Length: 327
Image 1 (tube, rainbow, N blue to C red):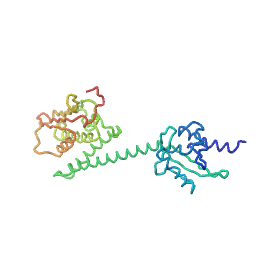
Image 2 (spheres, rainbow, N blue to C red):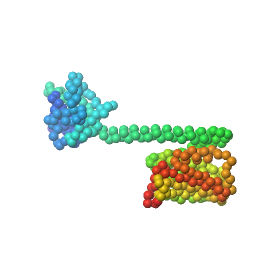
Image 3 (spheres, rainbow, N blue to C red):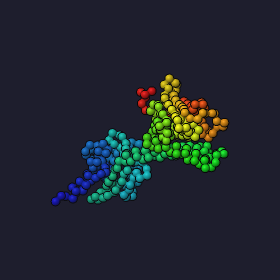
Image 4 (cartoon, rainbow, N blue to C red):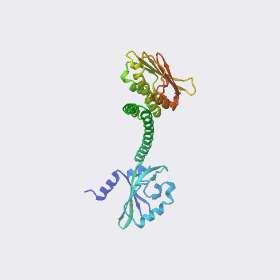
């Protein structure tokens, strides 16, 4: 029959945590294999070492005082819950840990069993979560600001309430499509071609899209979504898409010769009703001007054969080219 002490030893060695047993003189009398691997020591190398060898250098001088306080009232004690603790490896490097202390008496001698759990991965996860929460908060605040701007431009003025509501909802849906594209790209950006395609999908047989593959930054994606939504809406109501034979050509490129390197986009309508300059600046025009002012410069020409729109902005404000060899 196996000696019970051998069974206990086997359990301690096979445990999922690092276990270190310290005597009354603060010397290590036992460390299981997991603890030694965790702390970077060879098998059996920890035995006989002072417990302070596992304490980071910056805390080592004060550690004996903490031990004496514990010895005055020894009890089971979880450490590291709600505060940061670190253990020191043999090479001097540190890693975050949680430690549980359990005092015990064997043959009249006092010992403390310390359980060490490496929480490096947990800390990384917590840091990522804090980063994501901060980024999410930033995006929400940004989205609220955009929605407020869209609401003010859509619901103010003399437009009837029903029409204003429909315009507001259409613009929100345009923003929603842009946000969906950015979510699919894990918020790295949104493909410009897909933004264009989503806004003109109902007329895909009459809209030509031609340009390099560009990923648009988050803020620029919102602006492009609203811009293209307004251009498409205007084309459906008054321009090329209001006539059966009308068509639109959208072209974009990156001009390397300009400094800084520039992104250029043109929107050319053809085959619609004869165009005349508007007698007043509408809300759609205001949306276009407000959104593009944050990125670059633009121009609108009410040519008789069809509206022409052109924008130019530093590429760094817009986004980046997916395949740099294409420009």
